[in-house]
Length: 252
Ligand code: SF4
Image 1 (tube, rainbow, N blue to C red):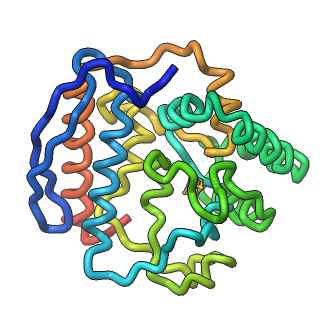
Image 2: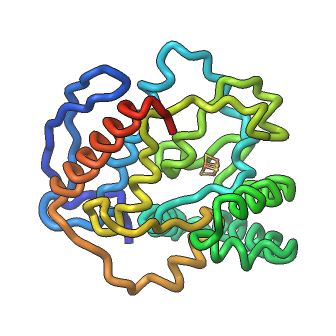
Image 3: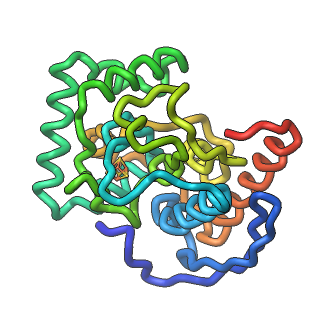
């Protein structure tokens, strides 16, 4: 099982409007029916473009070799869980790191709440996030304090970009962490994208439970749409959400 080799693909050209700029872009998407997981590399690329546009002109503190944020509770979409599971299918050492991390979190009494993350109220999620961070359990993909899957990392990781001093990330707190504000969070759109249209209920899980979740849901049916429709539906949702946040004057 691999989500990285497209058997056949087509090029879709589109205009991306971010941070007051219009960018002509093109992307290769699967030709014919595809699952959201098949389109993830393209959707990740769009998320990267949104973040890059938001970062323009700012002094970004994040550097390779600083993995402070990689001990946080990272929410990912179900499609990302499938993508990551496929990515490490032949990497037993990473799978072992997943097992050890989940065992440490279970032993610390976080397992039940992590498995119900979607159902927790925002304040409970925030409290869990702090407990999680203070345990210091590193992401299984962290090697030498750098992300070993940087080009394939989840959307939430791409969106975590700060301008506050690096040292503040070792004890993150809303008052001391200045994240780059985004006009729209592509990860949240992806959490609603189980139907390939962005109308689905919110579906997400902690990265650390990706393998466990996939083992339990491997045979669940997955929506299939034309690859180009998946891309265009995501772009439409991005445009609508961006317009909403701009008219409200807020960022995410
Ligand atoms: S996937 Fe990479 S960037 Fe994201 S938390 Fe893990 S090591 Fe860090």
